[in-house]
Each structure stands twice: as structure tokens, then as C-alpha cells.
Image (cartoon, rainbow, N blue to C red):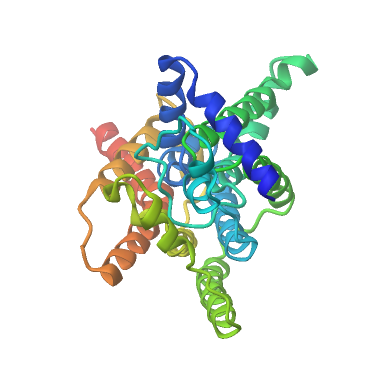
Length: 342
């Protein structure tokens, strides 16, 4: 693995030697398309396509993120920004490498969560766009455009992760391939989004199974939190160590989102309500409102206490699907009826 890691460091050196404008592009991409953005941006905006597509984006994302956390725990993947020091390579050679505020993620590195979750969650959107284009054209080349953009986006995301020293190339490749496979597989067997008990059980099952795996691994003598010390020791600026990059933050996000889907299913919108929403102008009205609501929700201050911080994260991601999938559409329909009343 050392040879593979060293080749990855060479790739990072080459990328960081690029022009300044390209540096800004890599930083924008890796900071604005992080896993959190799937829940707070892609999920609400997907309602502009279809409510089912939106729910599938969230479902696929939370399953992919849970799988990614488990993979990271047991694959013990290094990250370039600490490996270059731990391996002694930085002492043997002068390497012009820089860290950035988005570099210092605290969990293991394999496979890339950015690539895996993005690759999985965008699959329902890409297939929906391709299907929508088939209504207007019979050209197979044009129908493949969404998939081409999807591939290019994953390649760019992978390069950005290598650029900021968050991942090695083989980690972004494995993450992208795993994400594609998960997106394809989960879309073939979508859950019933009206079954509240299924999502409540899923939320509890994902959290308890992660706790059980972590506990069993600890009892077996495995240290699944080994990366925390390396991250804190090798990060250039301690303020860049963000708690939301820890695996347990991901699990709170996953469980909270599954719980939110379950709560939204308690009072689902009926066929008539869905038809009325589709007839609204502009069609992206509810999607835009959901995007703004989630932006405000996630900008609220969090507690400094660790336990309360994790609870706060779970609560926010629980509220997200309820807002986007139930409360805001009802609010829009209510306002429409009031406006239409004589």
C-alpha cells in the first residue's frame, strides 16, 4: 500500500501545482458538494422534478452514508495529510504540499464519502432527467447527457478530494464505483415512502447496529477511533478540525433523516395535493422554499456540549424531511387556497 499511497501523494503535488483559478474550482467543489449538501440542497431541489425522486435521493444518501461509515471503520484507510508525515515521506523529500480548511477530516479515508454519497444520491436525479428527456427526443445521445455530466462531476469531485489531501486516488475511485452501484441497486428496489414503521425501524436499526459494531470491535481490541489522534496531530490549524466530519456525526445525520422520513409518512400528501403542487407556477416554488428553510435551519447555532451537539444534529436532520415533504407543501397549498378565496 505504501507505493499506492506515495503515487497518490505525487498526484496531489501535481494538482496543487496547477493555476490559481483551478485551485478555487477544486475548493469550491469539495466544500459545496460535501455529504451534508445532499440532505440540505439536492434533497429539497429534487422536489422540482418529483416528490418520489426527492425522497429517493434522501433514502439512497442515508443508506450510502451508513455503508460508507462502516467501510471506513473496518478498512482503516489513511488520509494523505497525515500519512505523508506518519510514513516519514515528508522528512525524506521536500514536498510542496498545502493543507486547506476542508482538508482536516477526522474519520478514516477509505472509501471517499464525498464521492460515494454523491455518486449514490445523484443516481435517482440523473435517471429522472434522462427519462424526462426521452419525452422530447428519441436521440439516445441526448438522453445520455445527464449521465455524462454525472460522470464528469464525480471525476471532478475525486480530483478535488485528492487536491485538498483528504483522499488518495484509489479511495475516490472505490468510493465513486461503490456509490454508483448503490444508487443503481437501491433505485431498483425503492421502499414504500408511506410506511412510517419501516423508516422508524430503519432509523433505530441503523443507529443501534452501528453502536453494536463499534462496541464489538472495541471489545475485540480494535481501535475504530484511531484517526482522531492522527488528525489532531497532523492538521496545520486546529480550527480546521470540524466535528461534523466524525463518523458519529454522519450516523446522527443518517438516523435523523430516516426518522424524518418516517414522521413525514405519518401524514402523507394525498394524490390530489400532489396534483395541485405539480400545477403550481413556478414548478420549483416548493423546492426553493424547502431549500431556504433548510438553509436557515442548519445555520442555527449548535450547543458546545458534545452530547447535545450530536443530539442537535440528529434533530435538525429529522426536521428536514418533515419540513420538505409535509409541512411546507401543506403551507403552500393553504396559502394558495386563501389567495383563491373570494
